[in-house]
Length: 274
Image (cartoon, rainbow, N blue to C red; front, side):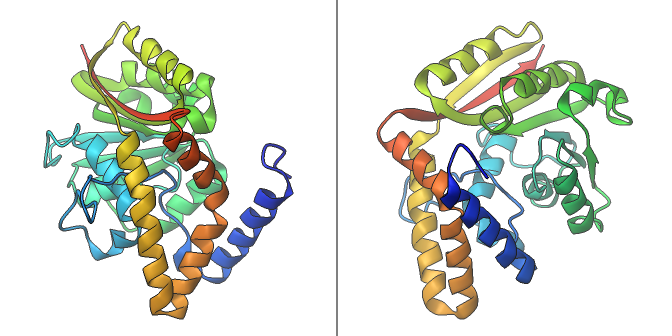
């Protein structure tokens, strides 16, 4: 049982797992929160591929980060490494839609690594590895490569400060000179201030830009809820999608409340290897 959330989140998570087992296409490829432009439809990506539409707003966060806050439109000459890539949907999007030359996703979860191996087996520009972040610099073949972009989404809040420190250390060692490390995360004001200070104290990475994405994440919550409800009204399949989205909602609702009440903040950081 999840001691942090009590019986209800534990029960809902297991019910969610059962539904996803029965309806495998409903399994999420992306587990991060979403990003929406502050307008009526929130669209940052106008030509998103059909296969990515159902996870548009979480993917838009990846798009915004991977393009260095919309500075670059095409990554065709870039090699990309995502650390704690979860279910691989974000790095898959970077590979397909941003046309990165080569992408690697690394997760410390055995089950998520197996999911990625099965889901993305047909891609010849995308590889996945299962490895703890503290062992990454000894992991073949990653340890001998240098990357143009290293990305991490919500690693500190999900995996803890120690793991995030390992991620930053990996970025310091595995980026090419001039390469980019970009990350995003959320937390209480004091915690995010500490995160910012720790990043700025890096001896090899220079802080280029940091942005408060709180309003964009909140707008994403609003639009995603509206979109899921519309799908639920259109078909039985859409209703199942809506039901699963609601089952996953206890953590999302808590974060949304904290962001609205200004108890928490969502930040993105862009750094460059000197």
